[in-house]
Length: 196
Image 1 (spheres, rainbow, N blue to C red):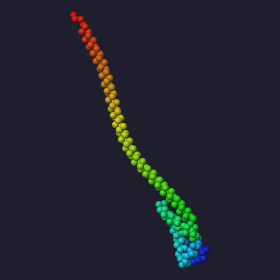
Image 2: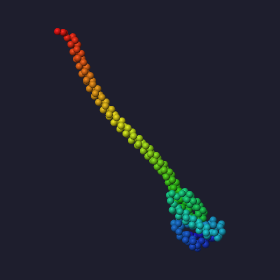
Image 3: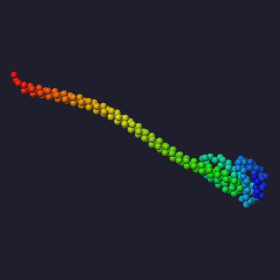
Image 4: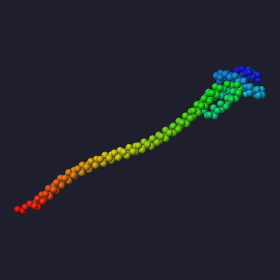
């Protein structure tokens, strides 16, 4: 890392700076910060503030790489808020910013899908409950239909038996009527029969 800023050349010999530069985050994304805003600070603070910004960059990259899908939005917002200041000191934060914004979009999309999923689960639960009620009513109606079919079968059988009895009685009625007519005829015949 080379610094064009005259005042910060002393950083190049700092063992702490060499350690920070050796960290994985700086190896993955080499940086050339200029730290120009630190020209306004007292010289005694500059090295510490420069190292603070370098460690902030390391922490932002590290935390971005370890974000979980259930991380709060405030964590992502906090990481994004650090980037403009780092950029003003010469850090290239484009890749980190792009990654964070993409992750934020994915998280929002997941939250929307999660909300939709909860609605669907609620609908499934409600419809399952409704289905249970319908099935119970269907079982009751099926039992009632079975009882009515049994009653119908009994009534059909009783009706057939009754019709059979009516047919027998009508047959008896005709026969008896014929007998009555015979008796009446015989009676008339006998009444009018000559006396000897």
